[in-house]
Image 1: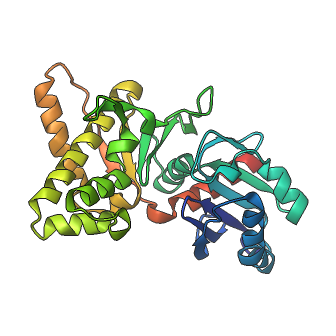
Image 2 (image 1 turned 60 degrees about the horizontal axis):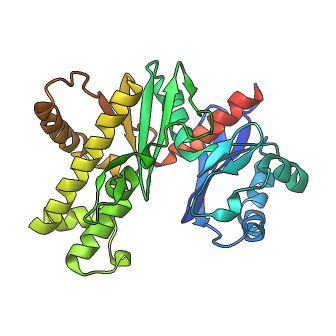
Length: 300
């Protein structure tokens, strides 16, 4: 009996590159991470050769599946748009990996990968939208079992949606007020701390310890997130909306969002389509798993 083929999957993020050796059936047999190179593409190749090329050869992987930020053209393997890692935008990654390391490569946007993992592991037959809550708000839309990329590769970039204005009258988008980073920024400002002294987990711990000011910040954060979810429902009209990102592990997340949706619908009696919410089942490995699913689909 032949053993399963294995693949190397990368999830390139602004702070870390996560990786995994994954079987063809989607089982992760080894995983780890290292800090993302910050400055140029040559550092990226050097880190890959140091951390991952030996693993790829040791496990005799059949290909490389990549989850990346930005507007990814799956056909050309070029990343357009903007991200925290500017050097990612421009190279043809499929050709580069083939030329440098003789590795077949496929690449897809990180939020789309998370949606594909949900599609693969959860056997979802519904049309759905995914909101990934992290340092920004990413998104994906799956219709009839396929990711909708959009004409300009910006399909489901929900983080760009404006949901209000700030104290100076400037528009604020979802990423600016409903991402984990904005929660940390607003709490740090309230407490007179540096952002580096906090993270999302610490913010919720402060509220649970009885800090009413921090609880107010969190309450407004939930409200803005609910506005974004409402807008997605009425713009795309999916069967369900799935919440991803580390915040999705909070047991009270959906209950708090539902409370804010109750308020929205009570104030808007003509709105009758209520979002059906759930959280990602693939968890923190979703981008790696979805990257492989994308690779396998492209190789069929």
